[in-house]
Length: 111
Length: 115
Image (cartoon, rainbow over all chains, first blue to last red; front, side):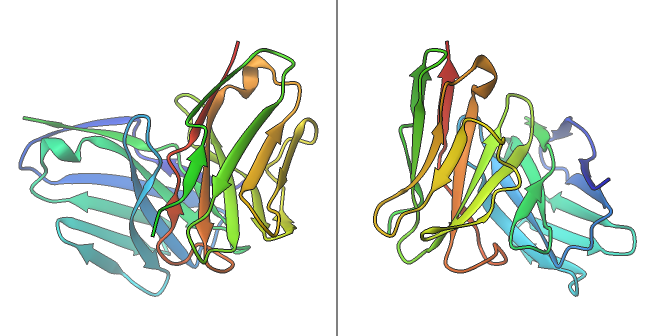
């Protein structure tokens, strides 16, 4: 069956360090993959999209990689700050104009 | 340019009542997606609509749930005879054309509580 898995339900990282979140999928061949941030009681906020022919994408302190052979995306936040604490969701294209989401990883940046 | 607007933000219904959730897409967007998020769960796809058309309703429960996106006005997600298990946050997203392969915009959600 088709599955998207994010590496852990919760992740604690010391302020200033790099946080790395993982998204693995099976039985899909997505043309693109997205990462979102969601704060409690709020809607998901789009962060980055990476396409299947792109290995890496950067935006300020964020970096996303996409390995279609491993069926994995890594999401990095460098120089992490307490304000980066949130739930991060990966979503991938199903090939029929919709996206499906992983359950998310709750990231806590410890001061 | 206002973002995706959902109302109400919070909705309380007694078991057996009807719930109507509204989503106004971003200006110029003609495609709407509805997702449901249960506590401690990820977002689950429900339905994808274009103006006056349901494109994909594969995630919608077969009974009690319906969705529409009329030519004029917001998209409506309607839940009839609500049960406690319908309590969740319902989010919509909009896009200018088919697919979400550009920056995708979500609303702030409607939190439905069934008592």
